[in-house]
Image (cartoon, rainbow over all chains, first blue to last red; front, side, top):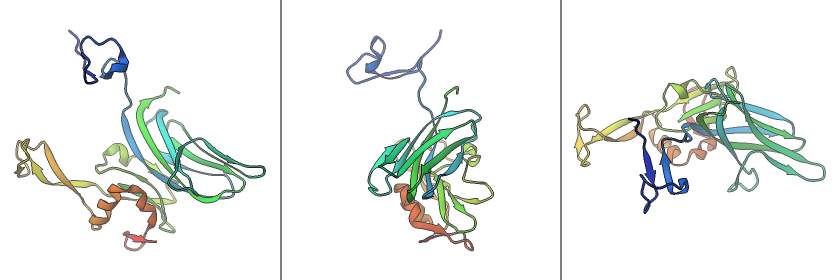
Length: 127
Length: 103
């Protein structure tokens, strides 16, 4: 006999509830599994630049990266993000391979230290 | 917290946050390996409690909970950084003493 773990929202029967929107956790379905989180400071001097976090998982993991707006420092946005006007641009992004997460700034004018905040999960994207 | 800094300047380049770092975190690296070095601060259990919240001695069979402290000479700073990790960028590493100093 196989067992499973299921947790329902308050007021719903965990055994009989069929609508998964009312289920908080069901072991039949995969979930995000935390691996690591932290931050990176990337000095940008009006030219393209990049740095890395070596995650060492051996596959491309699920990850999320935010950056702190260098001007409005209480604002955090997800990457990729573009700042652009008629003649200036800054493209902040993050990408991964089986060993690293890369934090990248492509720009012709941004001069600032950009703080990226990352969360890496064990989940294999299969990419 | 694991702090990565530039070996030439002492400037902080990045962090791996958290109180306990297992071998997965110790395999990670930030920046170019030849340019950066790291400081590792793990937290250790200093008081142990049983399931009723009563203090017990280390090694007791009933220790489902514990209070933890940073295992580092700059203990209070790491307590502050645990609450607000972004504070790390107000500091740099003194290359001689390997201690965090305010910029």
